[in-house]
Image (cartoon, rainbow over all chains, first blue to last red):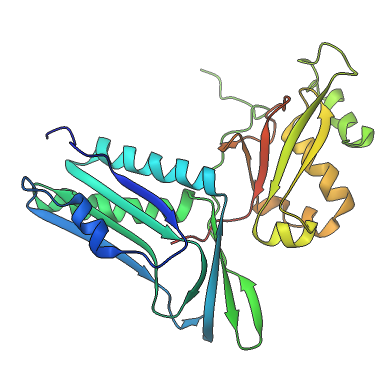
Length: 158
Length: 106
């Protein structure tokens, strides 16, 4: 693989995500594939009708974790470039909350890297979603990020 | 300031071994997100802790004044300076600490 001539595009945004710009950012003459993931706001959750969502983030750490994911997929898969944008603030039904675009010379790497990126993002990036319903609002059930081992824990004898 | 009571557990467990002067304190920034921000009532504050105190002691301090917060302890992950950190991680001046609820981005 060639070294990227332009860096990955990794951002947190408050305005609608420009998907065309993200795809254009990763797409180059040497690429045979661009795989994208469009995460969008669903109109229902646990059988209730969702009105809208509000996302908040620990922004500096979230960006750091998104950069880590980009680094991981470059290490693990033969990809060219990645663009990841996550939106914060109020989002209406049907709007894009997260968008990922990955380019590669051959499609398997881009498919696998894109899947790895969204799965890892949902587990490790400090972003929280509050769901608003007709009769109230709740913080969405989330996933616990993998926590470092406690130093007080007994270490197995070697 | 973290309560002496909350600290006692850790000093007895040997967690103050890094502290050279018992009276030395560290000023740390604490951040709250999501439901924790709603419980505590604000997004961040600056507090003094004994230098080298573990993140767990700082959380106990907040748990004592906000019992609802303590209820969530098992589902929280701690961070120090924007990296996930063990609850036993010692704190020093200038550190930024957060207690992170399960994440739900995407």
